[in-house]
Image (cartoon, rainbow, N blue to C red):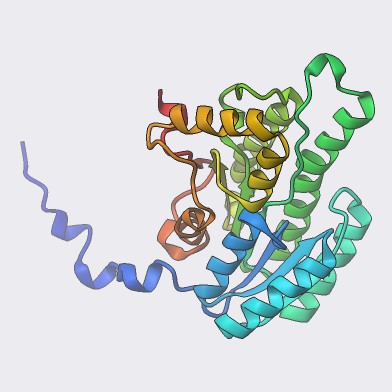
Length: 280
């Protein structure tokens, strides 16, 4: 048996510094749907803190404008806000054209826009069922489709990061939201399929799957339920190995990793950020 020296296949001079790969997004353009508040805002801010100019797409246009104004001031990058209904494919197509014209291109997309409704499946109306699929699945597809079209046209490649959920893998309890779980499983499979289809264009498609996070919206929803909400939060925390809910900033490092050159051989997969909830 002949020994093979690893020096013949790699060397320190050909390996980029991790400091250059990880976290440096200067000169990149990142689009974030649902970026006006919550987890979407934290992920958008992390991209801006890493040097990317950002475009926020959200139905909450006024909140989005306030969010990007703060980012522009504190992160010293270009930040714009765009009101849009992501379920309207024609509106999405026109908007991405405008964003590319305004920012000069698109390198990163994060699809954080999504809705949920806690309701027993037996009581779900057809309209509610269709709406949650339209926003979470159709809206995600329309946005990633337009981002990919521009990446292909410009020949730049890029990183598309969908936001799925640990609910793509488990059935949440004690609350019930079967349609939401199904949409997130659909987003995850869409991510894998598009990653394979678009890899020849140097477009990477990955997913982030959050668990229970202590967002302002979650706190409000739980508070509205009074004692039952307090019990639900306690249940979630007890069934998370780390014994707590996540804080929104704990998604920042993950999204920057997937957006940056530190993950150039990562596609068609997900990063589950759930404090170990799905590991039981």
